[in-house]
Length: 366
Image (tube, rainbow, N blue to C red; front, side, top):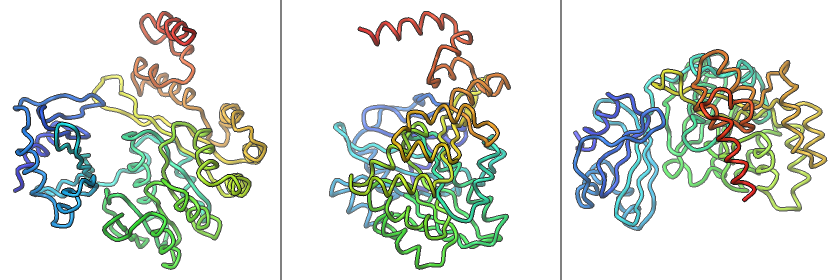
């Protein structure tokens, strides 16, 4: 057993989402959003490097020696899976191990809005799941792939960095390919996937112009494309997509968004009332004619008003979703206050909330 497995086993026993290892500090566990140290000595540089080297392949060791960050999936001796990022910083080696549940969750178990399930009924177009790092985007996409895998007979090609949840083919065939292991880039992976008779293509991240171009092409030519962006609202997602390509391609991108974008799900993880867990809360945009017109006329700043009035289509702003989850006693009101866009409606849930809001306004005017 690799020595690092002892820390991972402890993290799993505590139910943490991530295990952090860094030179000069003890190992730390992220518990319900907070980073907490375990009772252990500060890790030394040679010690930690020897730990991580044990679980690297020769090729990965060579890449790490050259100064490259390494992203990979790791299966401990216990069978537990982790997504790993290995890096160097000013004090030495650092590593973050993200726990990957063995069983793929369902959309229902994640408490996601019913409209997300409807997105899986489409045969072509693009669905984007967005949010900051660590907000559960990969878990949501895994649940969507699992639903497709169970309910339809499809060829699903999943391009990931790295492979996280492992999908066993059920009604569908699921092909999982890993960046830098099976393909050199997401763009190349999408290009290759289009020659593999796919019905659904999952793209781990739309991180560059070439990937965006190929993703758009795939969505326009009869495929359902699922992807992620590190954006924190529907408006920012639209703007990021439009700005991803050169100015001369702007009109073409806007046309694509208005015609082929199915929807955007932007999520945050908010603590539950007992503070022992976190729950996904989502802003949802469903493309319709009105939003398409706003995109084409460069009026995306008006999209939130469409989300507010689009409840019958399954749309909601983040603030609406947060208030609904508070009313249902699913999330902690004080934590919801931190994520709210317009904090004023949330001040009644927070001790001295009005004072906090006034302080924020005063600071903004300073």
